[in-house]
Structures are given as structure tokens and as C-alpha cells.
Amino acid sequence: MGKDPIPKTDVKLLYPVEQAETIRPLLKTDQKVKDLRLEPIIPAKDRHHIKNKSLFPLMKAREVLFFTLMEGEKIKGILGGFTRYEITVNLKGGIPVYLLRHAVYDLRDKKGRCFLKSFQKSRRDWEKSDLFVSSGPDC
Image (cartoon, rainbow, N blue to C red):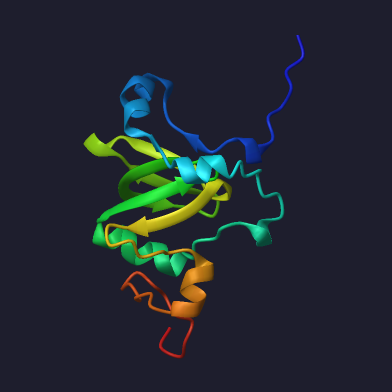
């Protein structure tokens, strides 16, 4: 039996199978985004990027965030951590879900403020976290 590999861009989020019955009801759908029928964005430079300097203060603040994925799934939770490839969101009850960065369409807080790089590039309203390390002369 041959197994066909799944392209990574087809995977949007990960969670333990044991948690599936708990997690599925917590995932909502943004019908407007779903109706766009967006395809995976293969070139990394064209994706909906979120800068680390935006994620650090959000992680420290532990406020509720709303992630929308490329196929319309909405995930509401608290940012638990992130790496170069994924973002960990703790759902209601502290259940971790791993969102792959290439699958993120939008990120907003309760006030509706957008944290995508394209928006922040024009607004420049991010806040430095004390976790942010500068490579300046004091280092």
C-alpha cells in the first residue's frame, strides 16, 4: 500500500485526535472568507504574514484573539506560543491548537485591530514587548 504525502500547504491546523470532539464545536466559520474559495498560497512572500514583534506583546498580554484561516475557519483563543512555522492558540479550557502560519488569513483582537504585517506596515502601531531583544549597542 503506497501512501501519498500531503502537501504541507493543505494542512491548516493540528490538535490531538483525543481532543477532536471537544475542539470541533469551538471552531466557527466565517462564511465570507469561505465563499472566497481561497487556494493555498505557495510562495511564502505572498502569504498573510504576522510579524514576531506583533506576536510577542500579544502572547504576553494573554488577551483573546481571533484567527481566521484561508478556508474560513475562525479560532478564538489566547496565544500560547509560536515558532517560525506555527502559532499555538489555547482554546476555551486551555486546549492547545497549532495553526500553521501559511494557513492564516487574518488575526484580530476583540476591538477588531488587525495584526497582519501588511496592515501593521502602514499603521506601525505595534508595541515593543520586554521580550523583544534589540541588537543595538547595549547588547
